[in-house]
Image: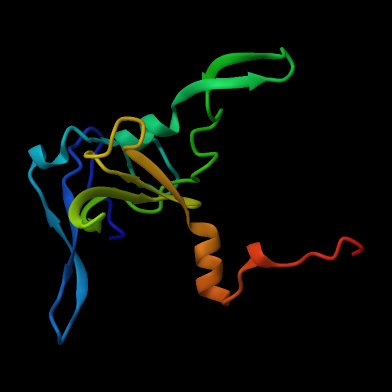
Amino acid sequence: MDDAPYEDGEPVSWYLVKISDPSNPHMTMISGTPDQAQGVTAVDVGAPTHHTVASVFWEFMNSRGTLYDEAADQYVDDRLWANPFYATGYPITDAYWINTWVTGEYTRVLVQCFERRCLTYTPSNPDGRKVEMGNIGQHYYYWRYGEKPWEAVTDPNG
């Protein structure tokens, strides 16, 4: 999965699938058809990691909303992040579709991981909930070190 399978503007149609061969279980990629991309395309954002970003994630990373401007003491409509990579970091994979078990049924989900987060896009979710963001930092830390830093007790006296 190190090679970028998408060119700028190309439909995002690759699937990541589990091969359940008892002698050699593994993951592999298979190419889907352009209509299976459901309108999602690859965006070349010039990332130093040389990966594209799925258009639905790029739109999310550049989204706008109502923010409170402390200096002006008022609410303003502005970009949520001045730098679209602020919350996610750069892409470390391209986007792949998976079929995964969600609330009692298999659901088609687009997944892409970045330096600090993994984003998912579930077309069947209601508007406003189609793109979701997971914090991979603390999960990795727990897996790697077996410690839960969020449960650590800090001595206020130092």
